[in-house]
Image (cartoon, rainbow, N blue to C red; front, side, top):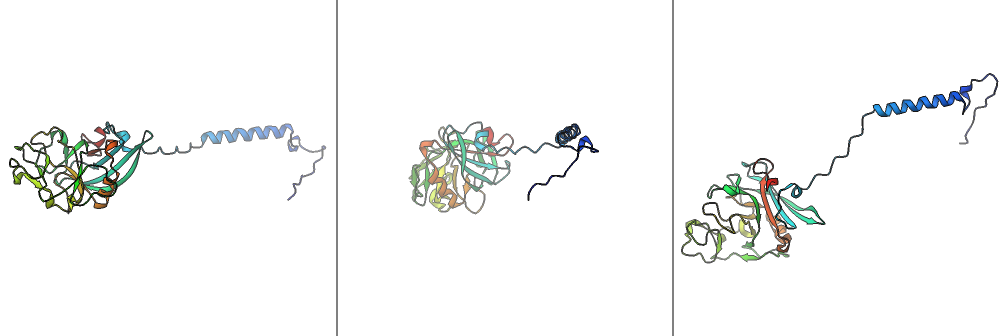
Length: 260
């Protein structure tokens, strides 16, 4: 539609009705002042919520590598939680996968003071020495992988020179009653990763045989477990050349995963 203009005459008209007149400029100025005051009185727009900081960036230590698995429970009495695996790229951490997790039937306990036989999962930061299983290694597995045989045991005998070690066959100084026959758990040990808790320099009485393995029927005896599909994905993802570690802890308190 063409723009129309209202005719005006110089005589008998108020100066304020003429565009560009002094009255018009005064009205415009007043309008601008009002708009400014209204803008100042209006509440400020809500700031955009900051992106959540990836868990590894909030931790005291991640092991110095480019891969990290976190196993987190809500508290030390919890028997369930979440396992997440992270990849470090270009200086930042990105989540590579996640799965529901189970912990020891006794909950979680500080790894440095844990007592063997308490069915607690030790908190702390640990390396992942090797993998094993009653099933073949998943395609893409790079970790050293040991197949479980009829003579494969994990020695938990505090009096044995093989304490907290894979043995095949079981040595005489490792009592069968103080060892775990790995083939006896074909589901849980279908595929597993050894968690380096009390492994490099074993302290007698602290605990032995702590793994990341496949879920059984319920809580574990101290290990961390995940569904079979998640375990297979983790094994295919782990790369020893990237120095992977696992951090086990709670969301808060003295055993908070961020403290490790």
